[in-house]
Structure formats: structure tokens, C-alpha cells
Image (cartoon, rainbow, N blue to C red; front, side, top):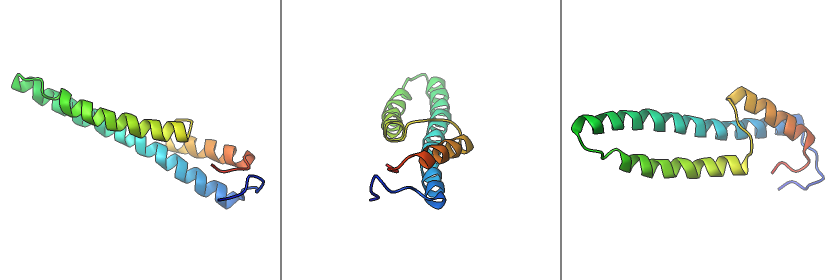
Length: 99
């Protein structure tokens, strides 16, 4: 672990920015797949005349919520991958402790 007085060099900033942006992008992909799959499950559920699709949506939704809490509470911010990279680069360039 780095001390709080150590400055990050450009390579460390780039590595951390890419890692953090990748973690956030992973949540966005998770959310997109959740929406797509649960839309399909809902259509199948309605076509069958039963409302069973709520159960996988609730279970998976809980997992998505926990994933989001971990990502966005541990690494505040948001946006698409490139914007995330830029934000992390700027923040890490001015921050002493990377975590």
C-alpha cells in the first residue's frame, strides 16, 4: 500500500484510471444484460399467462443492486468508459492516496 505522501506517476494514474473505469463499465454492461434478459423473460411470462418472471427479476435485481452499491460507493462517479478514464486521470493526478 502506498503512503499518503507519495505522488502517483503517470503510469500508475493510467493503470488505476483504466481499472476503475473498467469496473464501472462492467456494471453498465451488467445492467444492460439485466434489462434485455428480463424484458425477454417478461414477454415469455405474459405469453404463458403466468407472472413468473418477477422471481428471476427480483433475484437478479438484488445482485445488480449489490454490484452497483459496491462499484459506486467504493468508486464514486459515472459515465461512459472514455469519460470515466478522463475523470480518473484528473482525480488521480491531484490525489496523494490512490484509494
